[in-house]
Length: 513
Image (cartoon, rainbow, N blue to C red):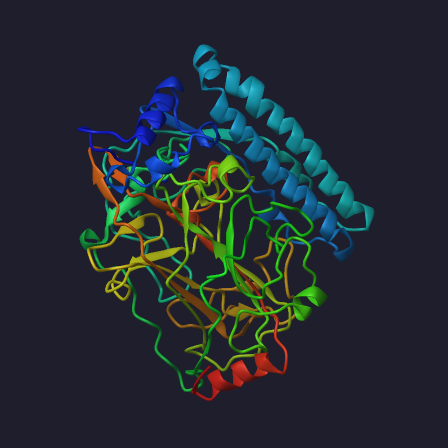
């Protein structure tokens, strides 16, 4: 998720250009992961450039098995979660091989299929079968159609030469799910994994796996796209509750994800910022979360709020430059701590809200939209001064001088009333209707968690097909650091009846904290 002034190139750029030329297909991030600039290079901000691949770029596209699992018996959940994490690890390893064998690919048209995609299918088939065994062993039902999801393909595209496209933007429904009517200058959706369809998945970036020039847009050139809010009914819950938990100034990071990959180190394959609960990792339990300290001013709020870090790809070596989830998996550059992090719970325009249940898990957005498509995308990127007019899903904004980059998240605000999680971490919660604010049948309104993160970032610019001062959100290496892969995670953990107090505040129309 890059452009370069031709008159003079930094040593970092020369390295990346040389590597791009050596690997005819470009793109693979892990090949360059150890090519970060030295200290004197990273400090030369006037020559901070990233270089796009010279020709085409390929990434691996695999069906997301986890999203198809809707019913996993409790006794099988840990085993299934470990196997799903194995599937992610297999894709990451295959992408690493894709990135490091470009010369072999250039010499043999069948290399990718025979040496990478074929073996990957065999590994995935065995892993999916272990999932079947885990489920059926405890009396659960396994959908045999999932066995057909073992095969992966590659996605290819020509390098985009302009940083702007249609720029209509995805229609934002005021903090709900993005309905993705526009294309933000990129392909409107990734193809299904059943076909090798070209998509706009540029290479570029300090690690060679994004971002590219097409991943950025001058926000002043994007037409307004924010929809009007639903009208409040007589039953509306109009209050709000703000919890102040800091911006992760203490740099609490890890590459785990206890929601989707419990018990698996590096289950996320990218770094997270953590605020609120300070003891969140792959091995956290409900009991350990209750016993942990919190960064929130209100010490009754032990909730876990965590999101992928944003990095400036300035050539610097972060603490994780040689670690999994960091440089070894294409997540490189200086981690930028937000200068503001507002966490607010708001109500429903259509009804009163029910208190969140203890230990409710919610993931909003999709870390794999590059290969999954945009069905679950819920990224919102903007700039201060533009938030009420323009929200972007598929591109990062280039903000005007004096304006800061803003990421906002609006979580699902409807709960099934029973489950604190679901097999695919989605079906127990839902978005309200964007026009009316009404929850789907069988769901009840809960306080909607919203977050607003503000960043001081060097202003990117696009010159001659390259990006200067690129920034990007961390992600799985094969997802190419696309803006649409942004996502956010939450576990509700409270004490002293705080969940009920939040709901009561919102239902009574008050502003609390």
